[in-house]
Image 1 (cartoon, rainbow, N blue to C red):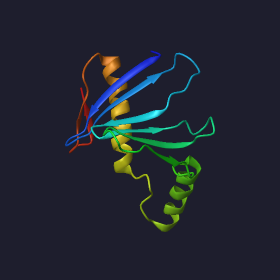
Image 2: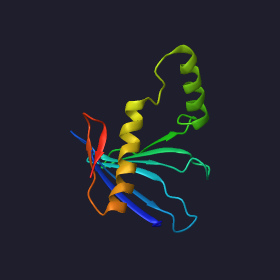
Image 3: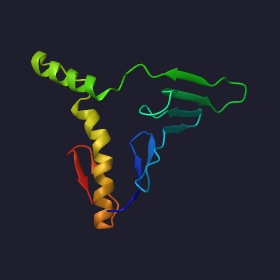
Length: 130
């Protein structure tokens, strides 16, 4: 099992996402989105006192914004929403379409590493192609 993982996922129409992971030590890293107009950094929500998202504009003179974490994204809340949706027959906040967009690139990275090939995704069939 490698202790370093880098995945580049190019979504149709954008964005291109670079996912990096390291299991080399116990030091966590913040989640960061880099865009043409700036970056968004999610501070580690399990450690430290400044939990939330930092929005750092690329343009000079623009102010940085900090949005405190208010408990959104809590796994317990997502599970509760899922259970509620079983009873109400409503769509959950994290539905299958979102799951495919998140999980498929991760599975593609694992398969690409194992097979030493580039992995693609057939959106019509919802199938990984090597």
